[in-house]
Amino acid sequence: MIDGFGRRITYVRLSVTDRCDLRCRYCMAEKMTFLPRKDVLDLEEMVGLADILIARGVRRIRLTGGEPLVRKGIELLVGELGKRIGKGLDELTMTTNGMQLERYAAMLFDSGVRRINVSLDSRNPERFRHITRHGHLAQVLGGIGAAAAAGLSIKVNMVALRGINEDEIASMLRWCASQGYGLTLIETMPLGEVEEDRSEHYLPLSEVRGRLEREFRLIPSLARTGGPARYFEVEGLGVRLGLITPLTHNFCDGCNRIRVAATGTVFGCLGHDQKVELRELLRTGGTEAVNAALDRLLAGKPKGHQFRIEAARPAVERHMSVTGG
Image 1 (cartoon, helix red, strand yellow):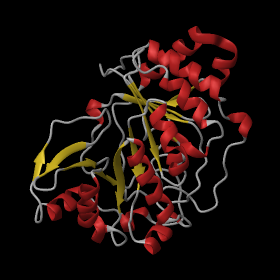
Image 2 (tube, helix red, strand yellow):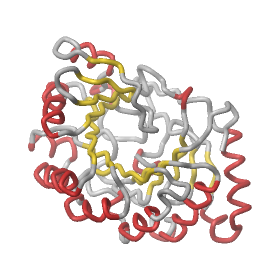
Image 3 (cartoon, helix red, strand yellow):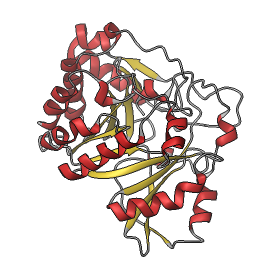
Image 4 (spheres, one colour):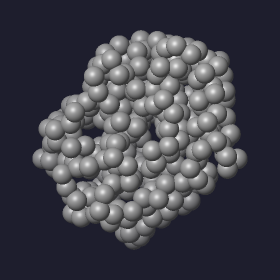
């Protein structure tokens, strides 16, 4: 799969549900309306779509949501996709908020998953609950511990928020180093309407990097994991730090991914509404029709997003949980 700018698409983020058991303030509205079940692909359709994508050259699939571990039957989906590893698929990974991780960690490893990303914006229980609206930090930390015990490699994803968690970033880096986890910092993105003004808490990672470099030596790394992060080795800590900078350092030139929503809608770009609808094609049209739609998507895939945190309205109306976080 090659788009109109010559970029080869080898990585798919597959949302298995738009539902989530948290309501993080920068991501969702407090009172969300989720999709009815009939609008969501069933697990067999997701496997069938994955097979079409793998046949076309996709080598990495990341399961996302919402929160993927709240999807009923998730263990069946992970097990089936895990069978494709080494048979066209190089890697199956997952991004999770960790709330259900203790229950599913061993299953993920047994199914062939070897690394996961866990969203964790604070290690302060009260602050964590404020950010997530009703999350339990101890439950997430228990899940991370269970994942590590199961043999999974863990990377913590932390959204940098001015006035909320910026004072924790250095300590989070040290904690991740002490536990053997990686840390990736992420700039907040203007996706979907939320109650709060995102610009009020927007923290450019260029600023964060400058602060960290007063305490640590950050050595640029050539490491890549298929996603948009730029990595640094932190001298003396033995930890890898990633920076995802959709606003301060656009990473679209090297884009290698498309995003599949739980409805079967495929988006060419996180920050645009350019898409094709595959649900009915999967149900009635078969592989040929799906491939034709994917060709149309690739031909029109935008060169890049144009996020502006200060804009009056978000870049797109859909929330991150719809697209696949």
